[in-house]
Length: 278
Image (cartoon, rainbow, N blue to C red; front, side, top):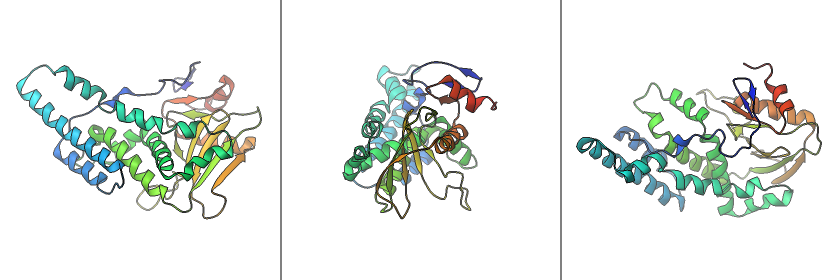
């Protein structure tokens, strides 16, 4: 593990670079609630009921929190627990949708994407890993700083809604391709960071400053990674053995995207990527 303080620490990845505040309910105003309802209005399918229930639960929490603040000095334990960990169960469910992706080691392991429900769940998981980071949260706060919306208060909900919207949009793209990337040599490994899923072409912007297109890249182990692209040609499922120089390019993309933490299976590789960074 590498931190910006130029310190390399040996650790496993469990509960590292995770922020507990992503499980937290925050009290917010009607402006934010109306925005969330608007953002979730075009969600379709069975997941819509879950999101509607989530928005309603948060609305009820807001009313209870407001009432509690008016009549009492102390927060009841049930309300306090909801405020601290209101999203934990839903987050656990979404994390479970990544099991098929993380276990991919051969081409046929990608075939679960042929099942519509499994495909949506995996794409929602990928999208959620993209949005559920401090870097993305800080970016959205900056984007909305000149509006009346307090994005910081609603980002935990917004990350879930945004992930579902992206997953639904790309699920039906006829040009979607699923790539398993593999390193078959011992010269180099995939690295990852506290932005575990990145858009490889996120720096290609349109006139409004948004990304023109999307290529999801997700390192799942030192020797395997998942890439989702949308090219009009090529096989739907692909297994690619990468050369060292190709892995190097992908690793540099990760280095350019990390916020606080970089992860590698060797100290030497981390130092090679970070020795010239502040």
